[in-house]
Length: 218
Image (cartoon, rainbow, N blue to C red; front, side):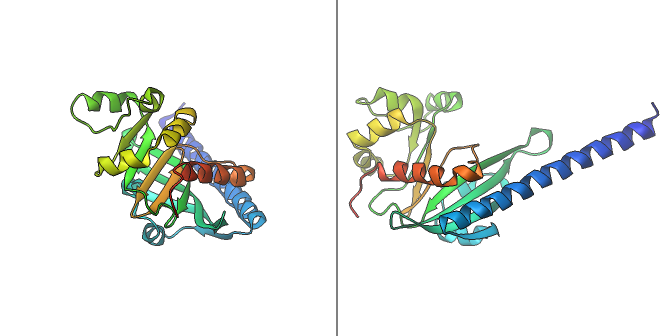
């Protein structure tokens, strides 16, 4: 086969994959719109990142580049304001780049009374980092929690007070959640997980249970 035909084939294949990906995203957006309508929420196909950050300038928004928010649902659940949306960002570049996608529940002012912290599933790199002084707040009374989660924040005393025995027990049984709190705003999500549109109400309910696990005083 001639080099020209090979190039043409590669270009055609790349274009086909891009088109296929766009069609999938288009179908997802429409399905998320229908899910939002069924929930009685307002819907925006493309989110304004500046506006989202004003509702919660969270660590998630500081990661990577090429950031996008899509299918933003805005409403209330259990008398709390919430925004549920697909969030995408990229780390690295070129062949070493990786695009992260997740469905995020953002609760503006949902963490009143909680200190700023980041809770994330612990991985092998975190364990290596701890050997070199990387912060991880562990709890001797809950080795199951400490084995599965990385917990970081400036005010360690306040964070330890917020993570009561009930909170530790909850997360010891519910793995893989990310919880970020900054200036009373809360984001809850599973990294790399986008909920299926029909499952949006159930996923939102799960994030609410995670947030309410802290049993803070309103």
